[in-house]
Image (cartoon, rainbow, N blue to C red; front, side, top):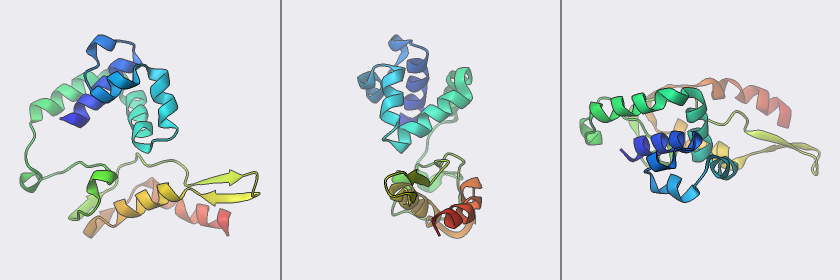
Length: 153
């Protein structure tokens, strides 16, 4: 439920309806521009902003549907949604990666005059990939790895 409240609060924050913001993190951040600034350093907040931008005014309805679907212990669930950070140390027979990974795992360093790997992002992807015991359904991020490798070679 915390994730649902976070998403819904972020959406209300984006439209300036502070009286509807209920998640403590969003209340503490206080406004949409501050959230955007913080997202530059926080992958989870960056993903949250992408979700708000993508689903926009559909978010309250989506959150209501998720709440009414109920929540159960992970060991009883047919499908489990998780962030990479919460999945550390866990494994499942089948894992499907979402399309919410960063778009680039490299940046061009003018100082070094070469492409540099964003190590934290790569480690995050590694954790996601290694959660699958038997079957992994990849996302579009993995299709770009060959291109990135060519840039750093």
